Structures are given as C-alpha cells and as structure tokens.
Length: 192
Image 1 (cartoon, rainbow, N blue to C red):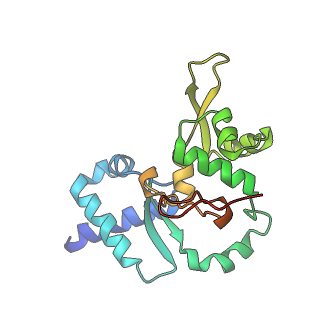
Image 2: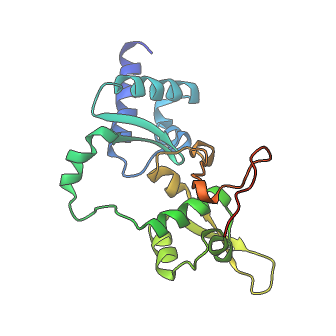
C-alpha cells in the first residue's frame, strides 16, 4: 500500500474495528468499504499490517471465529479488570467441566455429559452456559424422549480467542497412580 488512498483505507479499517462492539469479518468489512472500492486482497493485507503495527502495543488485533477485533492484551488483564469489578468471571469446576465436555465431544446430550462426569448436571449450569451464549441446542437425538443436543457457539470461540474448535488444546488425562491400569509388562498389584 502506498500513497494517500492506501493510508486512508488503512485508517478507515482501523477505525471500523476500534468502533465496532463486535468482531467484523471480511465480508462485513468489504461491505462497509464498498464505496472505497476495496478488494478482498487489499483488506486482508491491511488486516495483516494492522496486526503487525499493534504487535508491541497494549492493544492487539486478533482473528476470532466471527471476525477481527481489537482487544487489550491478556497481560494487561490485572489492571483492566479493575474497571469492571462487578464482572468477575469466576466459574465453578462443574460448570467448566461441563463446558469442556461439550466443546470436545459436541454435539452431546445432557445424559452424555452426566455419563462422562459421573454426576448429574444442574439446570443452573446449563442455563448459565446458554445465557453466556457459549452453548446452544443444535438438534435432538433420535432416541426415546428426543433429548437436546448441545454444541458450542461462535460466541464461545470469540470469548476464548479461538477461530475454530481445532485450536482447543489437546486433552491430557491426569492419572492417579492408584487408578492406573497395570501395563502388560507390569504385574497387577494384589489388593486386600
């Protein structure tokens, strides 16, 4: 990009992203920039340039599931969170386990979640996850009672800074030494 027009278009994209309360995807940006005659490649280049421009600043341009957005860097959270003392994001272990099961095994029924967790899932947890717009009903299982199938939403991906579910960290199972199955080369311990 060179010249006045390129700089102006870059500033317009930056302003749009800073002003938007929600992430903007490429299609939305192109629509907003239609009068300027901006092309897909040009806007993609601008987005990469802006991400680079903000690399060493307290704001960063990130690409999440629903588009591009500016956000405060994670390392600034201890100070920025002081602006929002009423919005402390503390969630119970049960809620986080339920969300993780849905994210990794979706679509799942409430019964599937309960079978994996080994305990019943409270209605409050499911309602909280739906109120946060992290999960939604995506259908019903073709079994008697037709239980709801739950899956994560694009809002979940955005809130966790993910573009897709493939970016979820791999599942690691922490095994307690007493609950490990004996290996073929290790004799089983006598109990009792």
